[in-house]
Length: 111
Length: 112
Image (tube, rainbow over all chains, first blue to last red):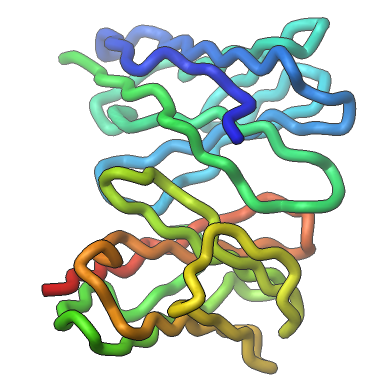
C-alpha cells in the first residue's frame, strides 16, 4: 500500500538544484525513507536513504523534517541525465524488505 | 553498473509457453528479489529469497515460480504465458535481508 505522496511531475532548469518533495505522514519510528530513480526503462537506481538525520552522498542530499512526516530529495546541480522518475519509498528497518514503488515524480531537466 | 546481472536482456515468446529468467546478485549479496513492471501496474514486488530460502512473497501468480541456487543466482520461471505477462522483470539483491537493494538492468518479456 502506498505510504508516500509525491507530485506526479516537475521541471528543473539544467544546472539548478532540483528539490523533490515527498509526504509520508504515517511513517513509523522504525521506518527508513528511501529514494530510487528510474531512467527510462532501466533498472531502478538507488540514490540515498535516511532514518532521522539529514543525509548527503555524491549523488544527492536528503532532508527529513523533524517530525519525519515529509522529506525532500535535493539534486544540487541537475543535468539532463537526471531526467527520470524518482520514487520515495518508506521501508521498515526490520522484517519485510520488499519495496513498494508508487507512481513517483517524473523530473524533467530542461536545457 | 549495480553489479547485478540479468539474462536475457530481451525475450519474445508466444502465449502458452514457458520461459526462465536468470539473475546473478552482486558479489557477497545473499538476498535476491524479483519485481515486475508492466504499463498498467507499475513496479510490483514478486518474491524474495535469502541464502536459498524463500523469505517473502508479493503479488506473484501461481503460474510463476522462482528459486535461488547454492551459488546464490536466482531464476524466475514463468509458465502458461499470457499476453498480460508482457513486462519488464527486474531482479535486485542485497547483502542481508534488510539492507539496501540494488537492481539489475532487467529482462523485457514480450508475449505474442
